[in-house]
Length: 298
Image (cartoon, rainbow, N blue to C red; front, side, top):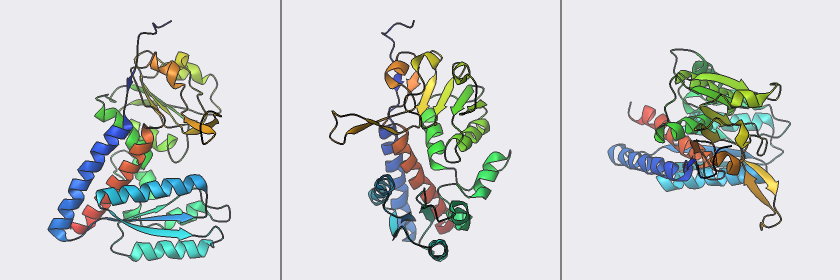
């Protein structure tokens, strides 16, 4: 057993994101003063899902804070796929919009892949356009935008002074939004990458070899302290609501990692909430700024 006196360094995602946001605000001010233009982000939401609405209002508020103009598009649950796509085309054509984000998931009757493929690749600040993902997967190619959550994970590692090159990294989960792109990013950064998923036998033995663990499986507290190599860096992407009668809301958020246990073993760990979440939003703002600079500074 490791002695209980060891405590991992907690990576403060909120503080790091705040630093990035103030860097962005400075650059936005500079663009505004020099060119009289500011970056614009269109945030499109369909329907009234509570979680989606809270993410969207968070993103819109963050824009305001750094001086990015937010274009709000709120569509009813019943909107047709054709109407949504024509809205996207309208935003593609608007020169004041430098980034377009369609909040996922979309209602069942709308084909997500089709809608995302209609977003202009120059405005794909979520980094989900198949051409952006394809370039991310290829050696020597650079996507225009990197997906926000994976980019945030790597930024947390580098800003905490954790080197990636030559390290063993294990990614738990293979979703299009996090698991897959974060694996590709780690590979680009010269890590040796293993992906663990729901069909992997004995995931524990693989996770235990990792110098860097990215947990993105969506399974509350699945990764126990005993799974973690002493001194490893653990980035917990999970946000799972578990019942907690002592809380006013009736639930609390936990990650995919058992935080308490992992703290006694890991070298670094991100908390949930306050770890990866704020970084995702900061990276979205950064992508929007980069997209705008590309256009405005030409």
